[in-house]
Image (cartoon, helix red, strand yellow):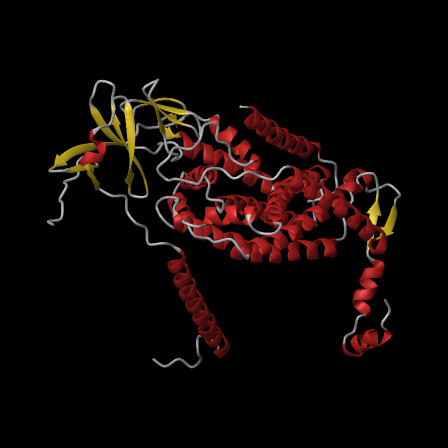
Length: 156
Length: 354
């Protein structure tokens, strides 16, 4: 069927074309700009490999920090000689926590949060316990991994 | 200084009558609250000062995670007058925020935001937000442990915002944690993105004030009063006050140069008794009021939502205060304003003392 009259005017058609083009152009430009401005985020590591020797002589009731991705992990030798590795970042607002040997607790100075020596939140604002890692050894390597992660070391 | 030929040169090319007329005819009302008119000018002056001292330091500062801290030490110890300009930049920033708040609270209590000046309030409010971001981004550039912890908390707090929080956090940090990427990003915000937005908004803000003329408080609207010319009377008064403020900033800068803490170490815990800049203290104290979990929800998220709601309400006051927009007295909003001010002052004081 052939229509006698066009359903849209020439002006509407051209306006739609113009604004449609402008919308496509600017949204594409904006998308590209945003894509650039937003970082491609790294990922928290599943495990880190450390040198066992460096942690060997650690006295009891003290901690040694190690890099965990961009943040800090803490290797704790408790007063009874057991060891524990946990993420040293407060679960409240992500400040680093400090170990207080005299009280056997972890303390966050930013908003006065406390965790016991197993990383359980006991006082102050922190909503959850510190993340505890699994410790394993392989030769002279000390491997600290998130719970439930299968560690596959690259064959050297 | 009278150069008739230069004047002629311009007048042959440009029609300056409009500007001359504007300068001659701009009037400012005189009344017992007119001191508040100067708070905006003082803030403007401090911003100019910040631009100048900032440009100076940008000549020497190195925005790299390895050299940032060192370069500031170098600025304050080795460069001629470096300590002075950094100190001036620091105190200029502090006073700019102080006067922004005074300017804001004056506007709030005198209800200068009422119709038709809502857009003046809106632009000013955005400028306050930008200024606070200026402060936050500026002090990360020191890359000392206090700045590091503060930015971690501030960006982490933004991350507690539902739905878009993670997005904002990633955008601000440029990485999953506060790292060298964050430093570079905040440098870009501090020296390129924020200044240009600020310039545009200050221009718009002043243009709007010029367009509407000065607001006269509701309580004085019916009274007889004198209008005094802006040029030269008010302008000269402005300059005199600016000179006093410059004196105050220079005095503070010379007598109390800001310290710089220990270099940031992502593996070290922050120092005891760490506190953010004073204009974040009310936020910190507010967040402390909320427990970690409320009825199974994350207390942090609820706290952030409450603070956001409070700020949003504040922002919308010109649109919610129907009475003053009709030109009637509006005691309810006076009380709301007083509550906001008292809350801000009390929480800030508590932050200092705790």
